[in-house]
Length: 232
Image 1: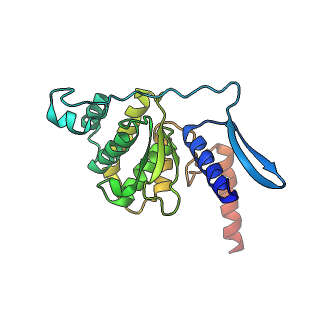
Image 2 (image 1 turned 180 degrees about the vertical axis):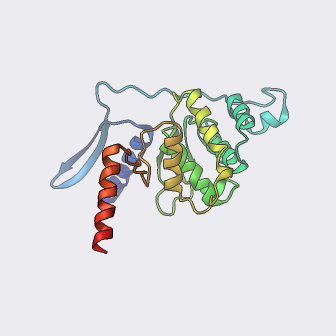
Image 3 (image 1 turned 45 degrees about the vertical axis):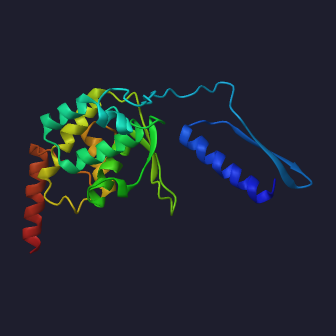
């Protein structure tokens, strides 16, 4: 094995391990200062992460042609009900639909690649919702490398509670009231979403509380005002 080929295998293994969350050891054997073999070793306490098994459809598996044609994903009824309850904007629902289809709707559930070009909404809107869904902890992401047309790699946190999703949909239903939606950056919007559902994210511009007015502070203010008047 050439040195260049070995380095490519190492890079691919590191990338795969990060995506699958398999933390272990990568071993490279050297002879005369040159790498000659490559191997991976999982730690003793390693356990494979639970994944959802998606159906593999055969011809006429369901009897419904549109389902049998390209199989189907698992879109939660909860999402549809929450969308109606909180009247969320179309660009949020479309972003979530395509993200969910590429992760929980894939054979590699709960993981998958998503490119911005795959989501049929304005790019700036898609970026905001993707950033927010990652910031609140519903998804993890490995950003795409430059030139990678597959897009970023997303991993859904399967233990996310329905109550947390309801808080997010509630927040999503308020964005139509934003006076300057386009002016809000994806990073700032993500922080707003995290605060809305209760994540510990400090505000970008913390508000300083007004000082409490007491008889003593009032007397000091009056005295200071009199001194300024006397000097003037």
